Image (cartoon, rainbow, N blue to C red; front, top):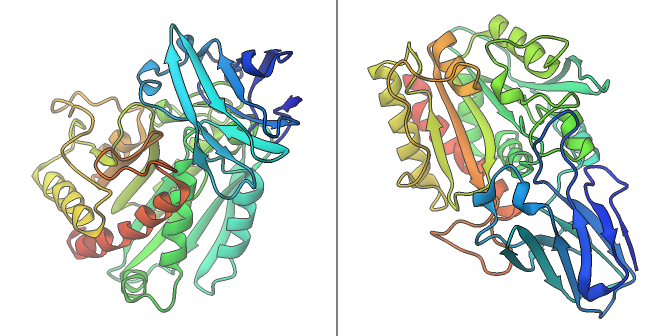
Length: 375
């Protein structure tokens, strides 16, 4: 039996694999940080053998609320991911499965590799209305890719969509696939009208370095990008620094930042209610977007989510709060679960890449419902 994480987004340390029913593992911390929870590894040579794989340091992970009710993801072909029996007890997360092939991959959520990211960028740039720009480089020298859809014009709104500030939240880039596929579909009437009314600036992956390194939450230096928006520098957080500079050039009418939540088994939106410049119009737009998305997708709901900040108390280092305050725009964080949607569960796959894509596509309906009200 062989266990490895020596690939894009891999993360696991093998302590002992002498006995298949007592495999001992640990997750590595993000470089320069104490954050960890993302894991991704491959097991070969255990076809038909019952495996018990114990991640012994799970009790020190970043979000312990993420383990109860959680089931790990697995795949034989790296395309279709299913859930496996998983238990959490006394700080140890144990995966139980009998592989039905020579090689199987396990992960915290269905991975989204940098190679797939490059495929997405290459596909999108083939559309006549898309321009691909590199805003700058990451600390590891990777490109910060921006897809701009449409040309500015009189009366056109400016919409920014960003994803995966936290690299382990891979559902955010799966969401991007669905969002872009529909936005660039010339046969979709919603997409056609939206592209006529707005220019889209889209960053499918805000954290390429953390993604490739197998980090949960930070960039190559161990910096949490979603705590950098009011203090970003080229030295610590070039990803935010370069994106924010372009945002200041274009302005913003609507900003949507896509994430995943370890603990809550729901899809929900958090707004910038606590920003000092948040006002009644901002509340009307926020409520309207959430209502429209609830109609567009039964996978979205408004009953469960984060506590709302009191007026004027928002942490302006967080993207949504900063943008709502700085640009006086409709700014939102969309969260998806690592576990499943408890309102509409799927026993085999849980929350999955395909459901992420469908929710991404549904957001176009909500944007169309609000676009004329953004100014």
